[in-house]
Every structure is written in structure tokens, then in C-alpha cells.
Amino acid sequence: MADEKATAAAEEQKAPKKSKLVFFIILGVTVLLLGGGGFFAYTKWMAPKPTAVEDNKGGEGEKGAPGKAIGEILPLDPFVVNLADPSGKRYLKLKIELELESPAAVEKAKQVAPKLRDMVIMMLTSLSFEEVMTPEGKIRIRDELLERFNQVMRPDRIKNIYFTEFVVQ
Image (tube, rainbow, N blue to C red; front, side, top):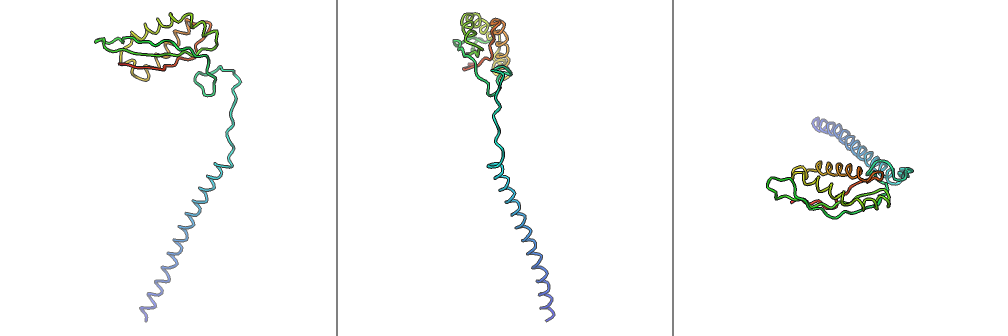
């Protein structure tokens, strides 16, 4: 009989501890679910929507900035040049499109197109395969061509140069 009382007392002590532990686990999960649901509802329906900022500069500013209007585009004929390779077996095929500020700049670029083509050919034939294949090399080519083209196009300006085809073999 004493044994029965001792086991009954031990069971009574264990039962409340288990029920408290289960209660706190359920409470914690409930709080996490309500918090997550509240955060989702706030971000989905109640948060203020971002507003679009209009640009009052009229197309001036940093090049490549999102939301800027693209200027006039002038495609140049494709270039196929041999690279400065000791074996002489590597060549580059390149298509370039110029972004210009105005239609008047497009007309001037058409007039000086032979000069621009000569600049591209002379620059590209002096480059090696290793210089052309890296992303940094392509950026360097673009920047250098842009600088040279803008010297010829003064006072008009070329806003950007786009490579629409770049094949090295």
C-alpha cells in the first residue's frame, strides 16, 4: 500500500511538469505563427507602396541610370579584325551601336563614320586574345572607344556604346 501511494505521488508530480512543457511549446508556436502572419499581412496589404520619383533633369545625369530615356541609336556596320596574336589565327567579330544625344548628332556621326570605323579597327587590331576575353577588357574597350569617339564628335556627344555582337575565334 505504501508503494502504491509513492507511485501515485510520483505520477502526480510528473503529470503537471509535462502538461506545463506542452503548454509552453504550444504557446511559443502560436506566438510565432501569429507574428509571422501579422508581418506578412502588413507587408502585403498595409505597408505604403513605393512611389516613382520623376527625373526633372531631362535625360542628363549619370549614364546607365535606370529610368533615363535612351537617346538616338546609330548601328555601325559589323567589324571583323585579326587580333594581335603571334600565330595570327584569332579574329574578332564585333557589332557596335552608338547612343547619341540628338538627331543632329546622328547626322554628324554618319558623316564621320569612316573615321569612327578606322579608330575601331586600329584599336582592336592592337589587342591580344587575353585582353579581349575578360569582362574588364571589354569594359576597357568600350571606355576607350567612347573617349576617342567623343573627341571626333565635338561638340556633339556619344552617350554610350553598346556591343550587340562580340565573337572571338
